[in-house]
Length: 242
Image 1 (tube, rainbow, N blue to C red):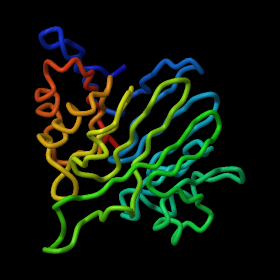
Image 2: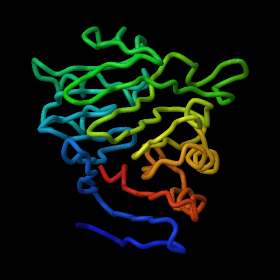
Image 3: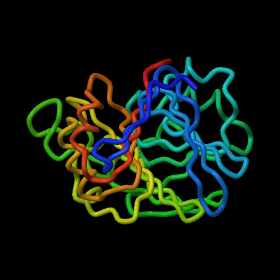
């Protein structure tokens, strides 16, 4: 393992850092282990029960020759989340793609989930969450991510709950989450939120484990420092090694 170190700050927050392409982290559940592997930016995999889930695979160049997907989750229409070439490279005849309606305009085979809707797949329950900007956008009166277009997700497997934020600010729906075991929380400007805002959101819903992701250009060590003393396990992994 290419590990720089693992330590505890004041005995109250665990921070672990890995340099280079990260090996899989394993989360224990009552249905067996879930392996988490970062790939790039917003892209990562979840492997459990012999099934492989890709989240927002992009860009396509990173996915040629990768193991085929059993499930692909897409959060939004932007190119760092939706790459038809990556979906094509990862798909096999029985691959399921779950996405918001805006994505289905490009990926016609996608099963649409709207904010607030749920479905079951392969031992997982998948619930679509809102993800949106409150105040940041390319110009006055326009937001980078309007409410209702994209999906965050809460996935449940073997009694454990995994939250994928997608591109969002510190929205009320995130702060109101309960009993999240593992969270993947975005942070980058100008499109989502800075580390300070992300840390405030995480303090509000208090997952057991949090991975900062989609963080290009942001200081994730500062994010970890802001969560010192909360008891949240902050896991810093390199989403930009590829």
